[in-house]
Length: 111
Image (cartoon, rainbow, N blue to C red; front, side, top):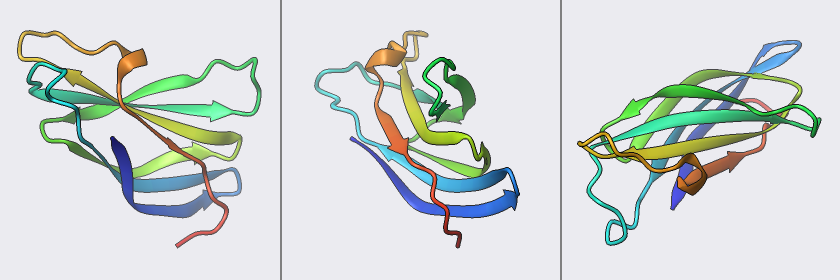
């Protein structure tokens, strides 16, 4: 289960927005080995299906939450996909296709 909380959008310029939010997750620990850290990525998706999504590494969490502050979101981005990759103490990690994800659609009203 992956959730977004404390979501805040603000206008950055005529061509972009800023996003701040808390991404939190719970893994089914009975199926997975104990994890010691989590890599967090974001993909910025556009309406152009010919454009490959650009994946950015946001950082590492040692708890089941990560705060994103002032992420630049260009106006051509139609959705965001946050990916949480669990990593073990031995260097093992989940395949990105199997990782928990949070999808978010940019909004045009600002707080």
